[in-house]
Image 1 (tube, rainbow, N blue to C red):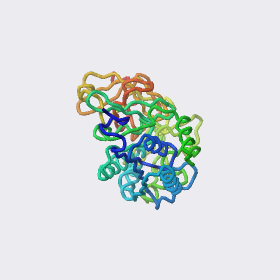
Image 2 (image 1 turned 30 degrees about the vertical axis):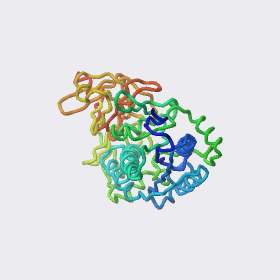
Image 3 (image 1 turned 90 degrees about the horizontal axis):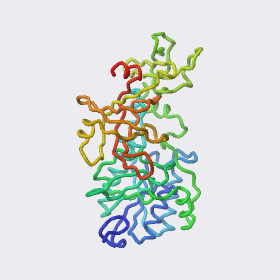
Image 4 (image 1 turned 90 degrees about the vertical axis):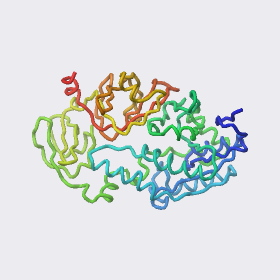
Length: 384
């Protein structure tokens, strides 16, 4: 007989490590599991600057968060440990983030953090502690699907975090548990209040937790002093418009802060890291229907090669805030392409393209990849 975590043990004999960030979601995760009788151990990761910065409201993993996690553990009566992961976080998340921006991309550090620090390093630590599972407060559902576990979009689509978890491997999915997958955020806060947790009304954390003042370019400039090397600002029609102060200050789709005046609205449509050239143009120049991917993580039942060769229809998200949209996989030699049924604007290399079997709550997550290149609609039309 399986327990509520689909494990063949009594809850009291099942050790679960809970990743406790100090927020309401992970705190409620620990509370639910403790209430169900599991042997719960809380672990909080110290990721940067001794856990002291940033101190702005809503920042994840700040010094106050460690104190909040410790206090929650005391209320629940569970052991709690703080692990110094600053070096791991710097090597696996912050440094690649800076390198990606210098390559003209727009990276997503939350994906890298989940893929490495949390679901690789912390998971290994949980196993070293004899845990049967690692639980987190992410809003995503996992459940048995045939002979293995699969990921699915949660009940609360406004809180859906599947976009940031597409790179989770099958082995990790089998060990991970997400107790909040069937809850809404208001229900989570109600549970926190019922258990008397002081974080019940705590604001949600924001992305790029290690950017203290909201300016990622400052972090990159500190790590990479040559990040501000100037380059040319050119129009798609070939006109030279001036100079810019570093490609790190630009991202595809950007309209403000271009440093050039024009009689028409201009957007960043391309960034060439080698020549340090930033190309701008009208909004229609941002449109794309085909994406080339790299580092694909496929979680479907059949092989990825089979799905790509037959042009598997699926749904994809290329922004965390957008609903999944219809698309299909395309195999062209060694390349993995995604054809979007409807064009998108402002898609940048470095972002994620996440695959789904459907579009609503409960839709299976089929994996995803990093966008390596986009093809303008005009170029796609000529190729067709």
